[in-house]
Length: 212
Image (cartoon, rainbow, N blue to C red; front, side, top):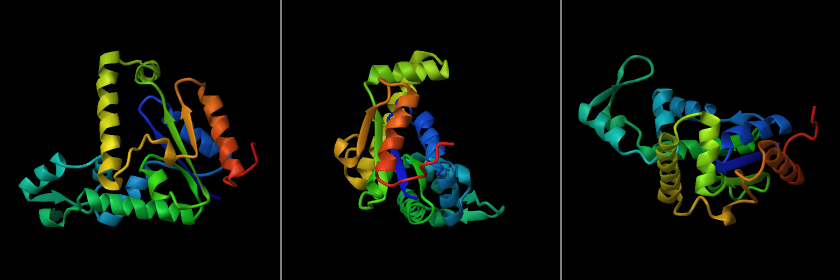
């Protein structure tokens, strides 16, 4: 069935476009399911996997290590020496992505999917981006929150996502060379962006042609 990976800058519409593309192509949308699978394999709560998802973890694990133990999913404690680090999360996430691509396929938002699955012919890699101020305006409009609050969140989000990819894969996640399709998500309606991605995916033999 194939895979569509999305890399989306904050405010560029990834959270709206990716699940809509999955529905149009009749593919599963893999979002919260990925950290849940990673958590199960590492034996930590899902919340910890989500906290580590697409971030370079430092402070959390230093705090836990200083305490010596943490609760595990079944009520015991895990010694600090047994706690998985950021590299373990990255490695398990890569395994989950490979299994998705080799199995039923799907649409994946984030997780450096374009880099992890770059050598597969049955994948479409998409980047959604846009000028910073227009991304900010779009995020404020969607959330209804104060602009300065959203700006801080956007800057932190962009930094951590870029840091994750640069730290583990030594590349720029915004570089066009990693993607088959790069779209300014702030310049077009969501429906138009979805249409573009669906057409590109079907051209690579991904997903179902049934639009019902």
